[in-house]
Image 1 (cartoon, one colour):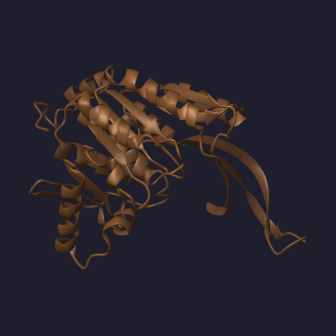
Image 2 (tube, helix red, strand yellow):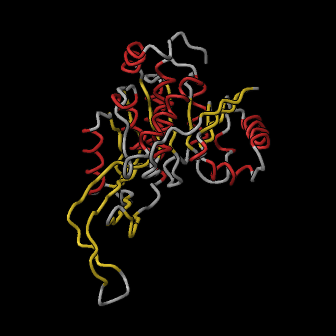
Image 3 (cartoon, helix red, strand yellow):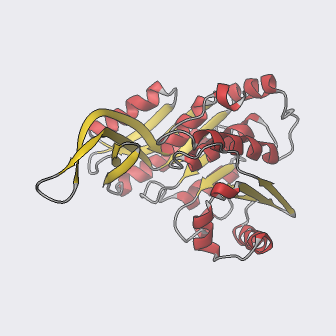
Length: 318
């Protein structure tokens, strides 16, 4: 992916981003945060009592990817499945407020995925999850919607959280390739065969180890990345490596970006920010190497924030 866009001309980049059209598909969830104080232990069991004084709701999963992309100024469509419930309505509202064009199919047979976190003194005390896989009929309807949406977008991001929303991922990649659209995948699990033919995969270090096995040094890591890239027919592989930064593996090329985090506060959702920024920059016309540099910068900003957060253009382009 060669580019005519000057990676240092911020005005041109921001103009190009405003015209970029990104389609995000995957598992969405509602992140609920209950903030409070703990001053005593329960008399009923040896557990802390949290007195909740503030409640926050944020979009998680693919919805967090979409709002990160929209925050940077791109035109974003989100395609996913939610339950026909109060949490689904809350997600829909969050997406509207984030400037995302949300096409959320309601499945009355499931509950919207909710991750409820209880936090006191910046520490997470407890997380409670509510989830159920979507029905076959709704997933089929989603695939039809995806087919129709492809033509109106420049690039596709598939955000897999292993919750069943990307059951048709093989077909989705095939359709995107046939339409000539780059497709980026944030993978899940240890079976990457279903992501074959994608433009780029963004596993984190532990996810990559689960698939490729451990390595002793960077040379062995590069060899494993090259092998996986060949086996899956990928243009590139971006391994995010936490405090070691991130490394892009392409045909005969390795580009390493050291971490830019000044203070790591919370890494949850950092992978969403990375793939969203990467997708936006590629859709805007930047070369993949330059897009990775911007993604690394965005990751350094977002890990200094609590919970699933977004990077603002003023922060990224400062």
